Amino acid sequence: MKRPRVLLADDHRLLVDTLSSVLEPRYEVVGRVTDGRSLLEAAENLRPDVIVLDIAMPQLNGLDAGRQLKKKNPQVKLVFMTMNQDAYLVGEAFRAGASAFLLKQDAGSGLIAAIDGVLKGGTYVSPQAAEGQIKISWQEPKLREHAPEPTGRQREVIQLLAEGRSMKQVAAVLNITARTVALHKYKVMDLLQIKSSAELVQYAIKHNMVSV
Image (tube, rainbow, N blue to C red):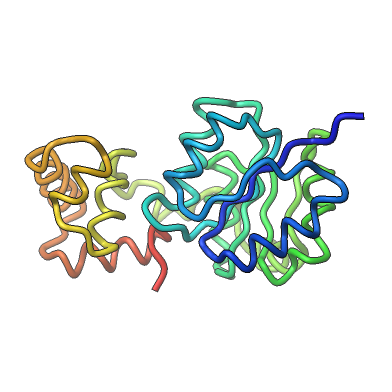
């Protein structure tokens, strides 16, 4: 019987190796990547059934990567993992296309249950994450419903700049000109009423594009 194909994405190599050894007896682990852009490429080449991905990844965070993955392949199942215990992240992940959400400390006991569940068409939220979720709606709070939202490309630019790359380096990663990067940067700063690069970094941290 053909085993389900799983792709792992996390910038902590030791964790990826550990998860792989846990999953291998039950699933076919077809690849391991350590950043969001490598994930997009690997997913296109390897066509996994399930992707287990971290939220805080370099170059492209898991939430934005998830949105792009689901747009290209709506059938793929996304299992998000994070160390961040912000209950609002559960809703963010499901709006980005998640089928499951786990805190990393629950992964040892919950990851196989999560993957089995999503392969049967279900959803899964690890117990510790679900506790915080009980008190809030999966919809964004009203104060955030009408907040201005950057486009997907603007979010990519924000993350790469917040990670410390120059405009020229961002341009190389995104295959656009440095002038276009600058236009995206200043448009989004105007949209968000951000006055400095430091505030842009703070925005990226607050919105889980980069981790501290």
